Length: 449
Image 1 (cartoon, rainbow, N blue to C red):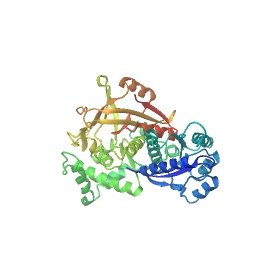
Image 2: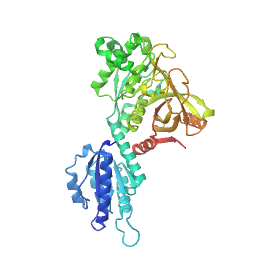
Image 3: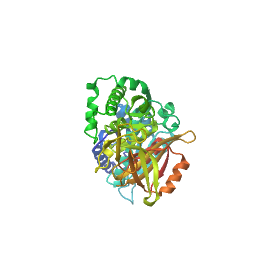
């Protein structure tokens, strides 16, 4: 699958080195990048002078470039890369290749070129990373796939618009954010919507407007009764909010679910969050803004797989596992295949409709974009395996066997003061998350074997 991103590939060299050998590297590198990326902007030949580089860049729409791949196919001084960053603001991957032979003439001196370029980029405080090796090496291919995917997600974070429907419940301070700081450091913007207005307006919608929402849910949820009043309230609220956020260009939402849904609408929010997340609009409960961003990042790194957001509620030392639970929100596709996504009621409020299932087994990554006043932004990364165990608690839950000792991990999480909402996705994207933290300059705390 091609990465939907736009890359600028710049093979740089000097005529005093072995350009014939360098040209082979350029051809192979170009073929590899074009096999991986949707759009590659590149010259037809190796660029061998700063004037030639300036001329090429004049015809490039630099604002749309997500990543620049600066390949020192031979040594080239820092004037080249300085010219690049004066024109292109995108992060750079500096790429040095191996010497074709050892003994006699130094034919490429590519590594020194990469070293020189990295020094300039560091001095100029321009975002960059480094790769060493030839295109046919597995670690080089994997490194580029990770770096390009990360830079694509970093770009998407700059465009992310989060809709917050109702302020977080009392005492749920971790659900809040500093709008200006969030946009400055990561890029997302936040738009606030009044929850009570949504309650008032959604029930005014004609049945023809929201009936399709019920039909969609009925096809995916076992035991759904379309005559149930709470099912109708789900359809009304979901339809109203969907229309509003689509008009505003919202790409993730955080919803205040309690106590307002139960007291004012007479229904649970869980089903709306489940439906939206299933449809690709990640949705967090309790107005957890950073939780929604965590879910968004996981979905993007896992090619659109639905993420889950849950509290860590139980530790099982015997199986080195932790149970993650929430009241009844979870994308339908996350249900264990033997049971499917079943309709339920909120375990405490006894109002519908909610999801009632244990999540499916499989390899998972656990993640949290966290924030504290003392530490600022930080990333939490854990890996594990969702066990094939019976549903542990009413609502939705999953038991995850961790890679690290569960007791030690538990105490470390508490000492670090991470938030109680953990995002989970059925994929191993730990390497991508680690690289994201590095590229964003955010402290990253990793639990893995």
